[in-house]
Image (cartoon, rainbow, N blue to C red; front, side, top):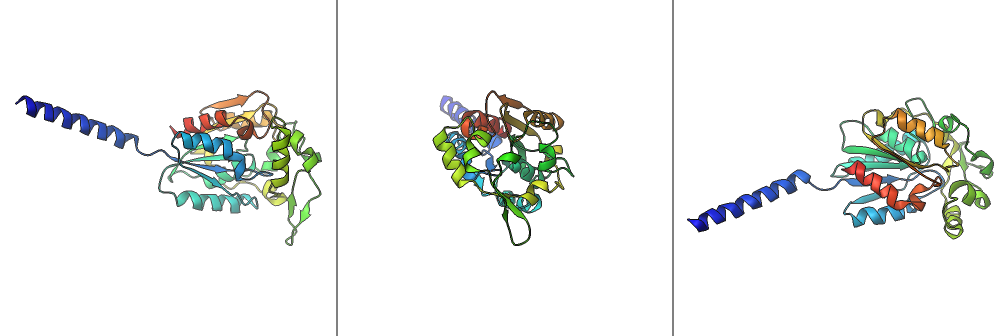
Length: 257
């Protein structure tokens, strides 16, 4: 009789443990979308921390051609994943995730890392000028004209460190400057047709020393989006995910939970 009772207790405990595991389920996939003048390697420090904590990660190679085209590209990647997704965007990548995200899919939450969060009809370029403070325009190199009349934009390598990544070592900033990927002027000026943050919960993190997007603009967008949590990193530049990967990973994990 005692053996039967003990067996039943073990079975009950096992069932309870199994139920708890099933309720928790697998962790969502973190999809990282870089912005202009960067590439997917800008997420390296964040990826290391997320993977250490057991999160599957995909760092997208953002085309940087147009909000609509880039948004469609990211949307297709997300739709192909067999899990829930936390969609994370940096800088112009915020415009892209806003365009790609829609209610009813597998996107669980949005995270804006020093990123634009445009409303329908707003462009990254317009939001940059909403409040004073951006010093980006004078640092841009001579545009590269493409066959269709669109122009590719780069930051002058000599000005990259101070403008884009002031809180990163000179050695790392030099490498980032050399490997930067261009964004088209069309992409920065194209208005969003979708604002995913209106239907999906969002989190924000940015530095108060950002020279690309004025911190006042970033604060305004976070407030408008009813951000679940907004973290302002003192002294951080536009590449807060490079200089403070732990803090960025932490807010991404908060959005995942």
